Length: 303
Figure (cartoon, rainbow, N blue to C red):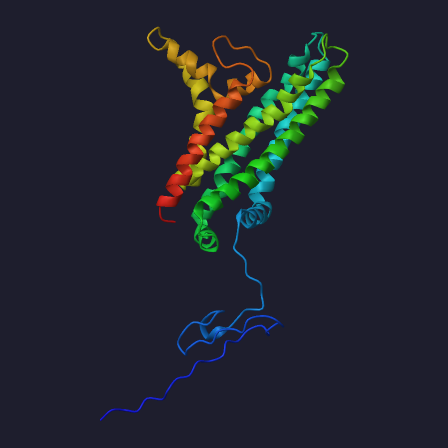
């Protein structure tokens, strides 16, 4: 004995009222998803596809609300401006005359020490999310992992560049005000540009390198230790590589170390080492390679 079935009829589509001259909405059968979703529901809230700008806004909200951002960048500002002011005061009280590059180079030590907090923040920008598990929420909200990493790089790199630029400009202007009477030859526009914008770009790229290393290692302590080793270990090793068999290696480590590259941007002359803008291109190539590896690993590895 067969059970009689009730004939089904198409249900009119629901949603926004029909406008004059608009084609009538197509009906749908029960159990079939309507034009606006199951049951034909159309949300009154406009829905659009997310893009990189949305990820940038989200990352900016996160980075400016973290205490680590304030402490690390605040420490960097104190080190750069404080040491630059101190060395300028010491130089102003001496009888030695400085040229333009020597005057601007007084900020090199402060920038070198200020790079360490920047590297720490670069690692924490992503490794802290792995430590707390927030990375799962981030990747759920934005499934495109490359977009997440790109947004982090844009926000962190831009913030680091602007902060370093403000600090280096302050130090340069302080040095110029205190040492203007002692300088035989004023620094050129190119020297000013390299000691401010060039140095700021270099520090920002170093921070992005730390971000890439943090993405690769996913461990705050390990990545920070690795970045500190990259900065401090080569010049220290060069001091012990003085034997004839390894002396050439020690010289290369010293000439191409991050501290020496930074001093080169301030006008230091290193025989056989990078000169001019070469340190910036070296850091750019290193950061690009590490970032490409970070994108590859992030897309292939589970969160």
